[in-house]
Amino acid sequence: MSPIKYLSAHEKESPYYVLVGQSTLYVTNILAQIRELLILFGIGMLMIAGIGGWYLARRALKPVSEITNTARTLSAYHLDKRLPEKGQEDELGQLVHTFNEMIDRIQSGVLRIQQFSSDASHELRTPLTILRGETEIALRKERSKEEYQNVLGSLLEEVLRMEKIVDDMLFFTRADSGHIPLQNIKSNLVELLEEIIRKMQPLAKEKAINITFHPVQSNIIYKIDPGKFSQLMSNVLDNAVKYTNKGGSVNVDIKQLDKHISIEVKDNGIGIPEEEISKVFDRFYRVDKSRSGDSRSNGLGLSICKWIVEAYQGNIKIKSEEGRGTTLVITLSE
Ligand SMILES: Nc1ncnc2c1ncn2[C@@H]1O[C@H](COP(=O)(O)OP(=O)(O)OP(=O)(O)O)[C@@H](O)[C@H]1O
Ligand SMILES: [Mg+2]
Image (cartoon, rainbow, N blue to C red):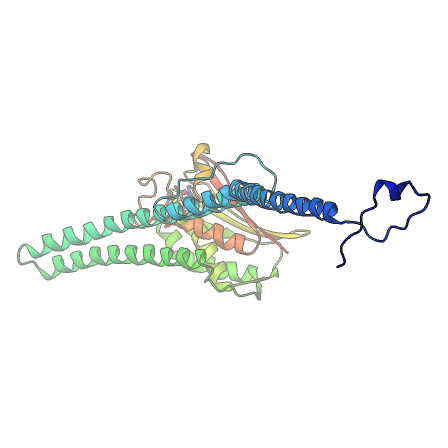
């Protein structure tokens, strides 16, 4: 570029002059300074944003790392830890809440399994101890044919008892894992009940118990699994006979009402104390082991009944008065 011509004072005084060029050095310097400032400012902002972002992300993700750490410490035997809930309503608050709820469910499931296995082992121990004791005694010396027959008879009773416990346990193992196939076959419940009562008669006769069944309707059709219905009603009738004294009576009734079917089994037996009624549906629960005088009681019958009834969206209730009798009502919705 050609050198710049500056105007002398004398020249500036003249009325007219032509400006042909001007130095941009001043502007260039300012622009360079602004650029430097912008670069420094940019770097500063980047650093602040980086550190701030890192801090905020760490704060925001703290619950996530807490969940990770808590999840690492959980195992089937250590499910008592929970994450602190600070009452936040945001997504992380909900995640923490859902996580805690999930552990609650897993914990109660694991506790139930542990309780079930411990009860089952306890129940199996008794017949096993009897089997062992009786076999040892029988083997101590030479015995007559009759004595051996007696021992074998008693051993068979214990084996049958163990078989029943194992069958019932298998029912729950399958039920809990959703592996019980339920059929829905149109069946006449009145006919099924007649058949179940007929099979129960020999047991009732042993105790001179009279089972009566006079339904008003002879045809009550319901879609059910006949095998499961039989298991349900046999358990209920077995209880009615087992917990009724000699010479007592059991009455069975079935009614088709507006929107549901009601089945009632009423006995005039020993009854259940009021405070125990809510517990009889628990697995392995027996009001008093000595009451039935029957060593085949495992306390699983009613919990199986409850499972079956609920599988058909029905419900099962007990009304009872100690010393006067028990009425069990099953309601099946249509
Ligand atoms: N009709 C009844 N009258 C009096 N007590 C009953 C009656 N039905 C049930 N119970 C009480 O409820 C408890 C639980 O019943 P459940 O049928 O579950 O077990 P169980 O009869 O003892 O054994 P299982 O049915 O496994 O052989 C019984 O031990 C008994 O004390
Ligand atoms: Mg029973």
